[in-house]
Each structure stands twice: as structure tokens, then as C-alpha cells.
Image 1 (cartoon, rainbow, N blue to C red):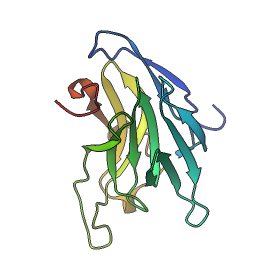
Image 2 (image 1 turned 90 degrees about the vertical axis):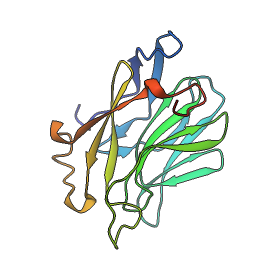
Image 3 (image 1 turned 60 degrees about the vertical axis):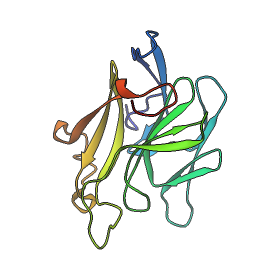
Image 4 (image 1 turned 180 degrees about the vertical axis):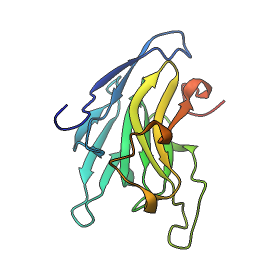
Length: 172
């Protein structure tokens, strides 16, 4: 695509309840989420993506939960939101927010810390791709060595298996 990948819907055969699920990927253009309001598949919850005018980072708000420097997000039916966060302005990692419980769970934690990045140097970005129960994301151990032009190289691609998640968004 001329303006980068803009993926609105992804069909995924994720079957913890033996039903094919439709995952709604919040669209991105050139590694940046598109601002807007995105409803959960069951319509019970919505996520607002905006750009912070002071720092320029992407923010995600669900209910009273505000996250800075979000690099990717997708809804998992019926109302769970998985999102990735960069360490520049945010708390790096991959998270799951459950609208039902209003709780956040870290699915993938940062591994590297420095004095400049006490919460972690690790860069995470959901790729928007899925295969079965597997969710793909890009990972670079140190954000200071990140080159966005090279990020989509398979060397940086990692897999998160969603089969261990319950319908409440927690791991078994």
C-alpha cells in the first residue's frame, strides 16, 4: 500500500471456545496508530487513540485507563484489548486490558534495563499478523538501536501464543 500497511480486519481461527473469532486490528500507517475511536467486537467497550500534542507520542485510552507511547493494538472478542508499548514515553511490553474486569495484565515483559530506561529499553510493536492462536510482534532489545526502516525484518519477529488466555483475559 502507498501509505504502509493499513489493516482493518483480520480473520483468525483462535479457538479456546471452538469458535472462529474476528480480531479487529486498530489501523496503523508507518508504525503509527491512526487516531480515532475503536469499539470492541461486542460493542461494550471502546478505545480512543490520540496523539499527545506535547510529545507527539500515541496515546490509548480505554475507560479510565490511559497508556502512552502505544505502538500497536487489537481487539480480541468479545472485549479484550491487546496493545504494545514503546519505552520512550511508556512502560514497555505487550499488555492485555480486559473491559469486563477493568484490569491490565502484562503478557510480555521487558528484559533489559538501564539508568536511562529503568522500566526497560525493549521496543515492542504488534505486527497486525496472526496465524491460528499465534499473534506476531516485532521486538528490539534496545530502543536506542531501533531502525524503523529495518523493523519489519523477520529477524525481529516474535510470536505470542494466545491459547493460554482465558475469556477473562488472564493466563491459565
